[in-house]
Length: 481
Image (cartoon, rainbow, N blue to C red; front, top):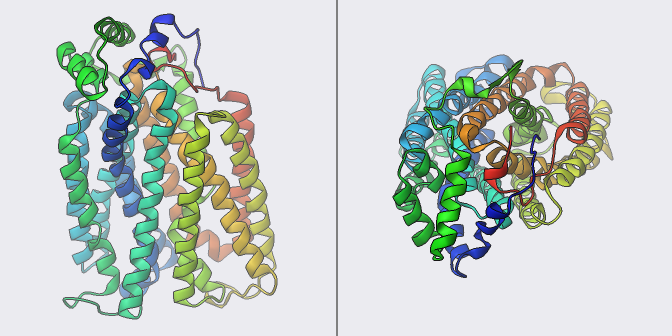
């Protein structure tokens, strides 16, 4: 993390510590509405978990096509993330979030009614674009409206929303499968349960679209679009700033950070020898977050536990329990991120993930059989289950929320939206690589698969110690490239 130079007195004075007492509650409500994009992000990416086996059987998919059907939305997410920065800079953060809501609603309806794998992939790609847009715009917006003293906690709300979306998706999957008697069985209106799993996302997508209609535009975006009076109105009325001298000082800080005012260009991300170092750090954070294999747990866990001897109902229950654990540890991370900082949490998470993934690799090395006949003898089944949930705890405490906090705050103002778009696009491509390759890797060797993820967790520890710098308490106007 490249953060250089001391925090100026003006920046410190203009922090949200000078706001009125009620301002924090207002900011939390605004951030919560924006973070619903993260809820849809989590819901859309995890809802496929309960439908994997049904999709494979309904469309007669091989392991490779199963992996692509599960992960195809991630290609759309990379595309959406790539263009989200330009959309957010041109049309505003709020309008771009509304576009994401529409794409996700349309995708939910199309995927639920798809009668061919090609149609399903198309609609999932469209939903993925919406997810990619939301993954960039929400953390950008949250960072730009949050006081520095609580920015880490508010930034973590994006990850909390993501894990809540994952939890609700997995819970709804389990409930729908239970009511129908199986994901492939008919439920309502002549549609199988797995179709209703996709259709269920219509509800949060519509709620998100309505709520973001009521949130104000980012003050920093308004300044960048030469609308200082509107920026002052947001700072005064929404964030509770009433001291006129402090208002003007805050506005001056924002204007100074955006002094090199021009239409944002991709060339802004380039230095003398390629991408700016800060952009490379953001890309690496995004890639490591995915290469530790977390989404293998959230996309394939029901299939995995079913394959090693658990019933379908028990596999769904285990998956839901894992998502509950993920939510709880994310709450712990929110409480800690502004107290002990971003970097210490990443170090703890990397070390813990490397250890627990290595244990999972060892457990699956004791298995007999292969494919659907895979069996984990006692006591390795329960040990693998404990290790998997411990792994989720370490991820949820660290790399889950902290990476989104860092990506939302680590870049200088003038390149934030575009740099975050590049980092998020890299994250989705990394997610696609891991998710699409897992079914084939699992058929080859589960111990090898988890050993690879453990190696990346160890590499992420070295990377954090060497390249990531702390941003706790640093004003966005003082971030340097």
